[in-house]
Length: 557
Image (cartoon, rainbow, N blue to C red):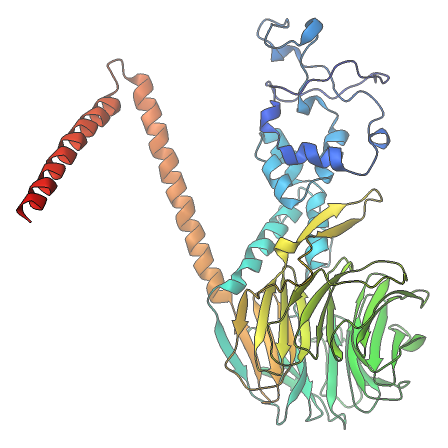
């Protein structure tokens, strides 16, 4: 049944968008998710619809130019379809869908496919899950032949995210002489940075697994490293931040081996345990119970956020920064320095590790009790306790490090194991009235413990740091070696399996087409149906014969 609209109380516009297709799109072809999304959207319809929701059909929609009984509704009015809506309204409806529903809508018709393929929602879906694409410095424009569209980027990233359940190989990097406390992946440059008790920062080629450069000794244990394409920062137990700026034209961005290419920032009064960067600021946390926010251009301290215990971890997202101190979790407004949310006693013992979703509304914490919690951030300081939405206990020792790349949370622990947790089934992207997307959480039972999807183990104890990116997981610890789990082998297997499925589907469609042509061109009775009847009769006789044989066998026994 086609979508019908009758007696719309709105002023009719002078110009309406005609249906570019010469056929109606029935309502049965439109997914229920699309219609439910529009009805469930919190945004008022009045703010979207300023005129009639349907435009008149084209004359070519009926064979005789007049409305027939099938193409007309009650009172003889022409039947309206979903694609008679103005294009801007169709875009608004598609904006209310999630990625799966938008993909289904693109299969309804060629017109919807073209609209959905170039829809701006794919960019939002990508940024909600993974942030800015690594190595993409220029915006993607529709119609560009030398660049992938946002839908293609999203589908490729979604496909690669499934590889962590497949086969892998392990590369072991030797070079550090003592335990490694920090690892950091810079995917845009395919670089890996590591540091530890031997007081040096090492730069590795992520693809080849070769050591590129080694910094001069910083004179202290290096506990944290962070970097982007313009700045590299390392810090440790001597309370300062060592900064290297990228050199234009340099083959590997940074010259960490040079003695004059760094700047030191002083301000903390205790060991620095965690670092992070965004586009305008540098964040550092310390055992002096503070988080400092630095201007990355002038390298000056802008704000100091005071905590009630040693700071163990931090993660900035947008205009907020989350941090852990003692057993508690703090969420701060980075611009004003005000505390917006606090989670008391997140773990039994210290909360050692923390990571966030790219939207900043989901926080994952790991603690001394070996548990991992997921929290939905609330922007208030109410007295009510914020309970975890989900809990995992994959480790028997403290969780020292967490990393997140949608949909995977990766943890490393002192028990020498790495846990991979898929949170996709717990999260669903939604859009609020303010056009801001957020994740809706499916809460688990209060006492329920979710199982991890995969465990990587068999290594030495005390894994201090972990990172995830592209198709690799990097981890290091007390052994003094860096291990890289490379899942590119799983990517090759998945591509071969996908090619075989496509080939089987193509062959099936070709056989089906040949059968249809044979039945349409043949004037005599369908040979296939006659053969099928003969096979059916033969099958019945053979079954009777087998039954008799079975009965005779029973009699003999």
